[in-house]
Length: 233
Image (cartoon, rainbow, N blue to C red; front, side):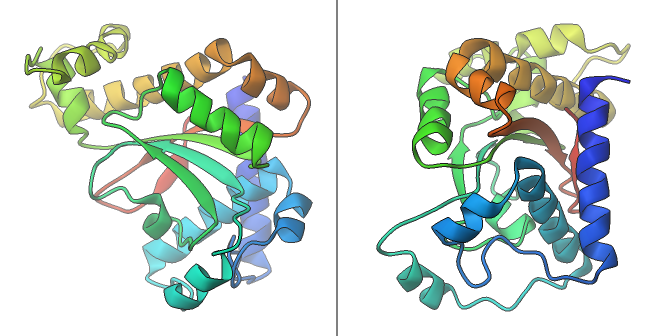
């Protein structure tokens, strides 16, 4: 069994345990302080976020007082994760994983790719600020992936879309156009898997923290039609 499969099994088991107990697992309850964050394991962070997503899908998000949460975190933040996600307006992790102020760093760029700036931000989030997880989150119906498939050329966007060509080429399929929704989503998933590998390869800092068991690096896909976040790497 692959490492990714083992990781998904572990996270899934942790989420199932939380849900079976009927616990309202949330990173902020009300807000995530240093003591609570530091006591969490990397697997526990992922489990809490997936449990929050389960509440979101059921329409059972925990009551929120964002003004109070804002005030509670004004003097400091202790996020448990950094999420590398797309700029898509439908994929705000704070909403779909039932989070609040101070729960997670969020680095957003079209196509949830990484460069030196994003990796440096993730290194700060984990090595300096103490986050326990790096989550690369793609989503279905991604416009950046569609643009890469269709070879769109437009100003600075051209170089950005070129980053996804490897994922397009690595994804099998006969109808290889942006009109084929299944192909688009398959490429988006491939891109997440490749980006997770890129994080480890290009950041010795993050790779070392993961080897030491201090963080986990995972990939996920968000379904914009169902609301589900599922681990894929």
